[in-house]
Each structure stands twice: as structure tokens, then as C-alpha cells.
Image (cartoon, rainbow, N blue to C red; front, side, top):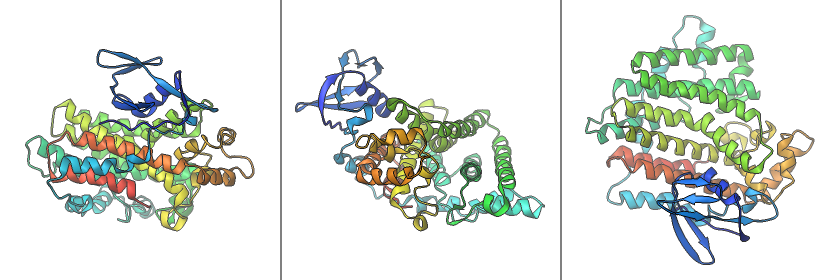
Length: 421
């Protein structure tokens, strides 16, 4: 499945296109357009400014404009890609009606939060209130829903009964517990005062108790993980906690080099958001199927959907008001974070680079950066990038045997792209 490539500016030899290809495309087929010609390249490796194909080496052109890599305007993700996910869904599943993912997973998620509260049971009233604060059933429960659907899809692919294994449902619970613990800690780090439309734990009980509550939720999740009794699953989900910490440290830093900056952003996005979804999907596949290829399909679906979800979240920080989003808008800028829309806006407003390096710390930086993003095509380009990741998620999950759960996971990619909160 070729990724559309559009260019603006003139072509010259160089490394920038290779960096761009490496950062966003990885190893896949890429369509390159030059003076009306179109060539599909099956990329195996990149060496310098040479792309290693299946037996060939082709020198890549690049686009050079007055700025560096992201001055390219990221035209590989053009408006035609807006129909990609829908097209994939039709192509693979035109003969079946796709059921709503939330409805399909509802039976398995009915008592999810009650079961989590049972896991978190403590006699101390205050700690109990702290730990149960966000497990009120008002969250999206996106992660456990994806895990449940992936588990059922893998079970059916493996010629098993579609019903969840006990360990698979435990992983769905664990994924929500790890996610919630990370939110509690994030709110302390960021000094946030609202989350999911309500006052944060650190505002109600203070930072010290909030940190302890997050730690306690993680410890209970770890004990639930150990009870599953599969060392490989324990290793896979332990990676999530390591990634969360590394991702948080990455968020505290920045890169001076434009080429490295976007790669840093995407890697941080994976570690902080997508790793939990990817590794949880992989974990439920391990419990039912010994085939590493199935594990990789599950992982890659979760990885791509997770990154797309965060990219859309970064867009909503600019397009959604605080009441709708459940947290303050422009929060990332106020925290000194340069997300996708800002990095893309740098193509048209190079003065953003200096603001990024000082983390929007000077007077008026947040307001000016906000205005530049809205005046640029940064929001639209970030949406195109999210669509690219959803396209790849569809490609991966379509390798599993047909099932209502597989179709629901494909439908979910559309919901990720269209969400407004």
C-alpha cells in the first residue's frame, strides 16, 4: 500500500528526504513523484542518501527550500490521504457490516471499574478515595476496549473460542490501571488542576498523596500482572512502565536540530502513549498464540493506533475549548511542549524555533505560537500524519483472520481520527 508523496519546491540531491522517509515511513512502500513520474519503492533499508530495495539501490531526491527538513511542508501526507482509512476498510471488508467497537466490547467491560476497585481495596478510607477517584466509569476506557477486541480477534485467528481468557481480561484491567496511575503522576509533574472535567487528585489531596496514590495503583497492577503467571507477558508489560518513565524524561528535553526534533517527538509519543496500547495488545496475543508474527501484528496495530490517538490529542489542544476537552486548551504550549502542530508550523514561521528552544518561556510566546499554529497548515498536517498511522494500523490488523472484532478494530481507527474530545 503506497504512501502518497507530494512535493513543493525543487528537487536536489541530499539527505533530507532520507531522514524524512526514515522518521515517518520506516520500512514500507513509498510512492515518489517527480515531474509527473510515479515510482513505488519497496524499502528495506536506508544508507546515506540511498534506499536499499529488493535487490536495487536507488538514490533518493530531496526537496530543498529556505529552511531545513520540515520546511518540506511534509507534502507526503497530502489531502488525498483523508480517504485512506475508509478505503482500506471498504477494500478488506466490503462484504460485512462493521459493528461499533464500544458495543462489541461492552459485555467484557461492564464490570471493569468495579473489578478494578476490588483490586484496589484498602481499609484506609482516604487512600481508598484517592485510588478510586478516576475509576468512576466516566473515562473513555479506550485501552481496555482495544485490548478486549484484540484478544478476541487473536483468539478467533488462532482457531480458538472467541471468549476472553481470564488472563486476557486481567490485562485489560491492568492497562487501565497503568494508564490511570500515569495520569495521576502526570498531573503532579505538570501542575494540572483539571482532568476529565474534574479537579485533579493533586489539587484535592496535595502532590505528596497524589504521588503515593499513583504508586499504589501501579503496585496493585504489578501484583495482578504477576498472578497471570506468564513470564513473557510480565516482561512485555513491564516494558510499558519503563517507557512511561523514559518518555517523561524525553518530554523534559528538546532537540536543537530540526531533523532530530520531530523524530524525538514521535519517539516520545510512542513511549508515553502508544507503548501501553501496543504492549497490552501483544500481551493478550501471547496468551493464545505462540506465533511471533501474530504478536507483531498485535503490537504494530496498537503502536500505530496509539500514536495516531496522541497526534489527534495534540490537534485538539488547539481546536477544542477547555469545557469540551475536559482540560485547559493550549496546555501543551503553557508547559513548554512543542507538539506536532507547532513543529509543522515551523515550516511557515521559522521564528517558532527560538520559542521552542526556550520552551515558550518568554512573555507573549504562548500567544504568538498559538497564533502561528492557527495561521499555518500545522493542524492539517498533523491530521494527515495521524491518518497515515491509522492506515498502517488497518494494514497490520487486516493480516488476521476475518472476524467482527477485527472489523471493529478497523472501525476504531476512523473513530480515533474523527473524535473531538
